[in-house]
Structure formats: C-alpha cells, structure tokens
Image (cartoon, rainbow, N blue to C red):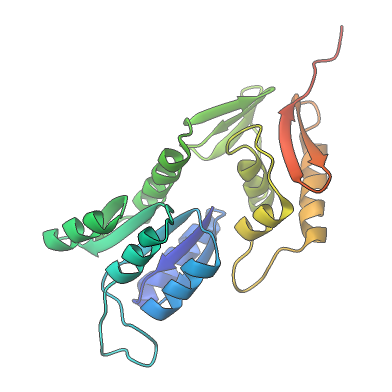
Length: 233
C-alpha cells in the first residue's frame, strides 16, 4: 500500500513511518497542514493516517490548525481514500468530529503499531469490497495475515516483489497500468522507473512458474494476473 502519514510529532511520525516501511508499505510523511494537503491532492493513496491537531505550516508552528480541514476538503472533491484518524484517547469530541467529517475509523493515542497496520488493512479491504482470502491457480493471498501461499506452503517474496503481486491481485483480473504500479511503489523521495518495474515483473514471472498463475502484459494498458491452463496429463 501507499500511505499518507500526517503527524506533526517528529518522533512518533518517524517510528510509525519506519514500522510501515518495514512491513513493505510506501509511506509519504507530512508534518503540517499545507504539506499534507499538497501531498493528498497530487498523489493517490491507498490510505491516510491523519492526526487532527496540526500546525498549518512549517513557518507557523505556534498556530495550530485542524486536520479536519484537509479531510473535509478531500471529501468535498470526491476523494474516498480510507482515512484512519489519530486522536487523544480522552477526546470524545475529536473522534466524533473526525467521523462526521468523513473519517472511516479512529484510533486513540497511545496505540500499538500492530493495531495501526491491522486497522489500515481492514479499511482498505472494506473500501475495495475485497475478501480476506483470494485464490488464483494454486496461489492464495491471505490479506489479513499479509502473506501468499502456494500449494499450502508459504510463498516468500522480497518486500517490493510482494507489493507488486499484491497490487496485481487486488482484485484478481484487474488490468493494472505501469503508472499505477509505479505510483503505489514509489514515494516522494524516489520514483520507481519503468525499467525497475519490468525487472520486478520478470522476477515474479520466474518465481510464479508452477503455481498455475501468470502475469500477462497487455500492450499499452499494463499487466494482469490470471490463472494458466493446467497441463494435460
């Protein structure tokens, strides 16, 4: 997933970003309203982690604004990206305001990072209308446990290859453009070019041999994962 993390606490933001990246996600981190609003407008995300109490800009750290502003603006322009609001645990009014403004869920501080990831996965599944488990050929994607299985055994992949295959199977049969894959696997610090993407696809094709699954290139459109015919015996 490509995630927008909006958190002005530098220490907490760095810890959260590192944890999400180690789990294989791409993370763009914003520390104030202006930066967060810019990121959200120019880049599609799979999910947004949003702290509600934010400075308006790096030059006005003493003047606190509200993350509700960019949340309302996103919803007003038709953006339905799942949003997990981060709030102070004892601020009931903040939670209500966030949900009323269009947030999909909230999590009170302090929280466990594992719960953040679990809630994000749940929000994205709900947004896609996807099931916890998807199967193509002999390959099974378990979204809840975030793993692939082939013939009942763990199908282990490096983080970037895992994300490519995850995106191609969400949902199965969907044609995914190179631009979409590149956007999901990049962040503002570094874009994934066509050559690197094609290298990931090539390695995945080799590793999927024998799984009953293939990745087909549709010229000018992108890639699609599909079940392969079983060989005749």
